[in-house]
Length: 284
Image (cartoon, rainbow, N blue to C red; front, side, top):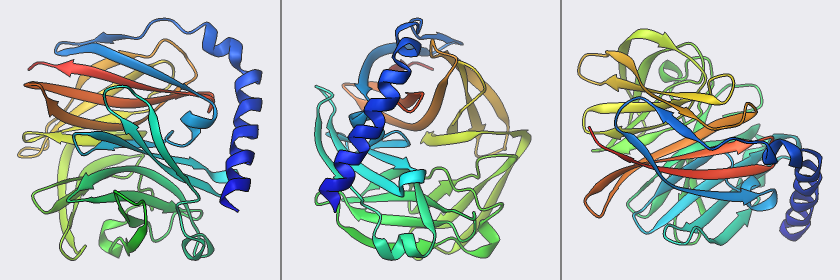
């Protein structure tokens, strides 16, 4: 069954890639508006490879781990990518168990690596009872899932999460006015941090110090990254990435340290055909 869906995924995305190939060709070079962020590396993936991680990205410092979703095909995937070469080392199709699909879960979003496990935000078709899906990072084995407590579900959209010091941070996707928190130990709801402005279309997020950076799938090719001060709730536009293509969708974000530098790594998708990993150095 997995082999069948792999072939189907490749066929569908080859069709999209051929249909919208011109759209990819006319993309302009990506640029950044705002201080601190500089494009260091861009890796492009075409149709089937990009489909397998078109939603989210995280890292353990050695590999990138990506998540993919094609809702009409009830398809989800996990991938392992070499951080240096950008090569896709492993792809696990149909990583969302059938039992979860029967319960309505359909969309793996952005997630986080922590202590040998992958914690992935997941939504249902009806946007009720969103849950954290947990996988073994080495084998991609599905381990468990945890439905968000009712107090922390909001409107049922659960596009991303990140983890630090035993706390899971997340927001909903639209009409975002607060940062919510879960206990990593027992997945109980810890409350929220009110933001001083409303933002929307949030697809990914990660922490740097006491600042939460949120990647928004803003309309058009220019994508805003917001910065939220977790101590005060102050929310501002940190920078704008011009992805060079009006059809681009901004998805996951992970922030990491390497070689004494800080990196922001985004996943951007064009027409569900081409996915790009864009890595930026960051200086405050």
